[in-house]
Each structure stands twice: as structure tokens, then as C-alpha cells.
Length: 515
Ligand code: MSP
Image (cartoon, rainbow, N blue to C red; front, side, top):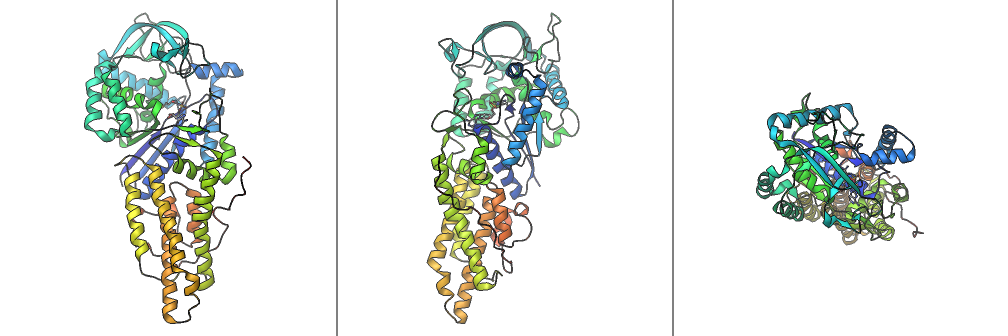
């Protein structure tokens, strides 16, 4: 069994989970579930980024301690991920003691392996608390950070520990060029190569003004102890989650895949690999920089005030419908939009009218014509056509072309469409009227094929809509759980003798939305 360690970004503990957080977790969850169905030994890590000045300020504004704030938010995030069916194996928090110790160990390891990589330097500049970083002139418009126009920039002067990132430009360029799968999609790779060509500045690794964080493990020459700068605190979570520097951390490290948004791809493909290289540790295999989901056409963010209430979206048609919609509608390699209108349309056309309807019709026919027991039937044209879509489904999901979840879902839904066409063409109800042996055999064949198709669809769609896939699996009378299935068993899947159990409709048709 090959190990597959995948991670998402850890979310800032600065407010409730939003659409962007949910999109990323749902996408990564589909990949995790997909890998489990391949038979991999998956470890899926998510968590919270809990330090930093922003957290400190938010807590102060609410009159609570930073720890109380992050404790509460960790609970809120976890509850949302449970609700959305995110099958994480580990939830890391950067305030965990083990993480603190791991970050310090990593920094000391860099001091040990490359003593010149950290040096002291005085720094001054405009600092944006929203970004937790110094801003260049080009990033400042009318005295404000372009990404956080509601916040006031602060002029900051201090002496810090710096990390010699500039030294790693050749190494990073080489990695990006010679191992193209290291960063996908391709557009992000080109963007990063462009950044490297523009020259890499060294980055500060500690801060004096920051109190809420992990003590930097070496004092400055003045004797002052500073706090670890946010990215040096946050990025190592992927490594500290394995137990580093103790335990059997090397059994899990390096990560196979980091799933992150396009805004932080550079931290994951420039700073993070350089830190690991400096510490003489293996680099992650792949980074996937997904796009942004927009709400109602506006760039969705807290500061713009445009929010989608996640609970409201789940209440509407359930978690799986929301998962389906986001992953079908928003390409995982580009930006896309959430709108209530499109949600209603897709729910009705793809889920209620197409998949749900196919399932309920087929199950009803097996009950009516065969007393609920699935007859035997040889494979046919529908199986061969499905095999073609299934191959394309894997090509979109397995990483060779990246993680094109929308494409894979499209292929699975093509099988559903074919199933509906098959019913129309074969007209089982007409065959059922024939009262001869050939007619009985023909009906057996058609019903067996349809149940086989549905069972395959349940497995193919399980990474995306896990609860509904299981509900269908149960209604088909299939043995075990859908998540125990393996893709390589699909070609020989044989439902003969399964006893179908008609249940609730998978996707009850929606009334016209009031939204
Ligand atoms: N804490 C850092 C990440 C540290 S990783 C070592 C951070 N947190 S965040 O809460 O701002 O964002 C978490 C993830 O959500 C990031 O990958 C980010 O790109 C993603 N998204 C935030 N808004 C988004 C959208 N509107 N759409 C899709 N994903 C976006 O960055």
C-alpha cells in the first residue's frame, strides 16, 4: 500500500470559516477519498493557523485572550468540516505544544546545517497586519495595502533574524523546471518562475513586536528573544504534524501533496522548499495551487463584506449537494463563482432529474419486474462506453494532469447521462410486456446492466458526494460500504443477486428557489 500524505492550508483563526476555506477543504477531501478508493494509505491533514498579530488584535477587540479566541474558532471550524463530510485524519493547531517544539527544532536544524542562512538585519518599512508582511510600493495604493484597504499600514523599524532565501534561487528554479509536477497547474509554475527571475529577497524570520507566537529559538546578539515570524511558524505545520523531530516522522514525511490557494502558492513553492533544503530535509512531492471561488461575481473576502453563509448553503440541499455544486461548477485549476441560481439549476438538472431519477427508476423496476433481486446479465456496450469515461476520470484525478476535479466529475456524470439514455433506448417497460423466454432474458440483461452502471457511479462519485453514494450503494443492496470499494474492482463488479431496497429519493426535487 503506498502512503499518501496530503494537506490543505491551515486556516487563519481570525473569523468563521468562509466559502473559500470550504472550497479548498472539499476539494482536498475529494482527492483524499479518491486516493483511499485507489487503495492508498491516506493521511489527510488540515488545521488552524493560530498565531500572529491579527489574532492578537481580534482577541483584544472582543475582550478575550488569544487562546480563548483560537480555542473557540477551532471548535467552529471543526464543526463545519464535520458537517461538510471532510474526512481529515488529523487536525493540527499551531498552538499545540508539539508544533511549537517542532518549529523550534526545525529552525535549530537550519542553524546547524547552514549556519549562514540566518543573519541579523535592521529592517524598516510599511507593514500590513492583514497580510502579516511588509509591503512594497507597488502594493500600496493611496497609503493602503491593496489587499486590505480597510486597514491602516504601520511604519515598522526593527532588528530581526533574516533567512537567506536569495541563496536558493537557482535551486528553486531548477526544481520548478526539472520536476514539472512539483507545482501545478502550469500557469502557477510560470508565475513562480517569473518571481524567481525578478530576484528573491531574503525574508525576515522573527519579529520583536509580535507577542502571540512561538519564541524564536536563538536570541539576537543584543540578547533579545524574538517571536517566530508567521510563515516560519505556519509552514512547518506539515512537518510537525508527523511528530518531527521525534517519533517516526520520516515514515510520513515528505508530504505527497499540499493543496493551497493561488495567493499562498509562492510561500509553499519558494519559502517552504528553501527552508526544508536549508535544514537538509526532503521536499514535498507536489503543490497544487487552486483558484478562487467568487460569490455573486465579487471577489469573495471578509473585507469586501460579501459572504455566503455556509450553514445556509448546506441547509438548502444537504452537504453533498453543496460539495457537488462547488466542485462541478468551479474548475479546480481556475476561478469560478458561487451563485444561488446556478446552485438551484445544477441541483435540479444534474442531481434530482438526472442521477436521482435514474436511481429511483432502476430500483423501482428491479422491484416490480424481479421481486427486488438483481438478475444476472453479461456486460454490454454501456460497460464499454463507461470504461472510456472512467479512464478519463482517473486521468483527471490521479495527478498526472493535476487535480482537475471538475473534469473527473463531468466524466462520472457522463456515465449517469448514458444510463438515462440507456433506459430510454432499451425501454425495459416495453420488454417486460413480452411473455417469452427471450423477453425475460432481455429484461434480465437490461436490469443487470443498469444496476452495474449505478453501482459504478456510486463508487466514482463517492469522493465527491460520499453520503449520497453510500445511500445509493445501500439501496442497490450492494455488500459492505462504498468507501471500502477499490477502483480496480470496478471492471469485474457483478451485482447478480443483490436485493435492492427502495429508500428515500436521493435528491428530492426542489421547489423553485425564493432566493
Ligand atoms: N494561514 C494561511 C495559510 C498558512 S498554510 C501554512 C492562510 N490562511 S487563510 O485562512 O487566509 O486561507 C486558507 C486557505 O483558503 C488558503 O489556501 C487560501 O488560498 C484559501 N482561500 C481563501 N479565500 C479563498 C477563496 N475565495 N477561494 C478559494 N480559496 C481561498 O492563508
